[in-house]
Length: 233
Ligand SMILES: [Fe+2]
Image: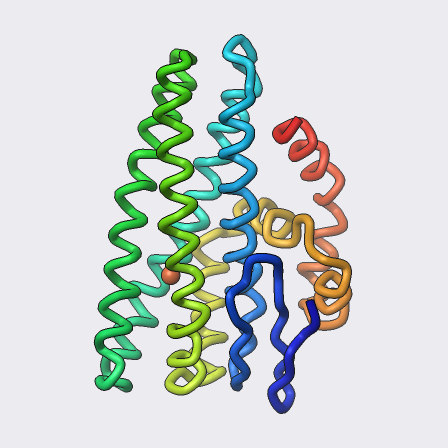
């Protein structure tokens, strides 16, 4: 897991990532988010399959965590749907087929996002083995559909972004996303997005991430890790 290099822009590589296409945009935030979705949807699937039906406190905590992961996913997809795809459509009409497919994959993921939310709410309200089976199916399907989409985006979507979106536009997009989260959201997002990283990526972030974010991370990390240790059991 080494960082690949384009003049001036090293790209990180995380477990599960399908590609690290070189180019002028720093894709660190994108890859960290993708890793977070893969990591936590996998863990939620395992935890939902094992949690005791009488362990209501942990079921509630897992439900809250799914809600959080889906909120991050919602912000992530909304930014792409509202800004990235329309821009690429205008600038790269020859890539319409790829953009259509990436958009359709968001819609397919939405179906399983909805089913995961409904199934987890029902399971949390009344934990039964039938409810667990429905939930596990929903989470596994969401992981499969989203996993295929993220890989497609990494191999075919990101090269289009690299070719047709400027670093200034990309930075503007990141600022917009930070605003959406607000301060309390960022206090949750920062430890989530930097959780369980390979050491060389941690080192990369220590060198390149904004100092303010590193400070926030130091302040909230221990509490976040305690919470995760409880969640995953
Ligand atoms: Fe996407």
